[in-house]
Image (cartoon, rainbow, N blue to C red; front, side, top):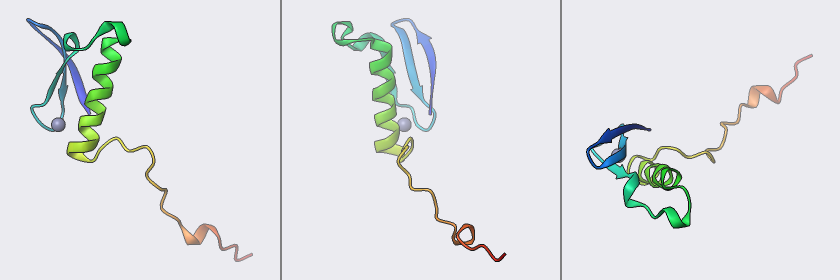
Length: 70
Ligand SMILES: [Zn+2]
């Protein structure tokens, strides 16, 4: 959903699906890992902008698994 790169300002996360970028240096180290915060921000972006990253998608129900013809 994103790739990690470097530019003159530091490490950045680049969205796979659009030009959106998160700058790791823009986050506040005092509240936790900046890299983790940037990754979270990018995941939120992906979810909100591209509908990706949902881990709560229901598994499609396959009725054939419920039938035991024997
Ligand atoms: Zn994007």
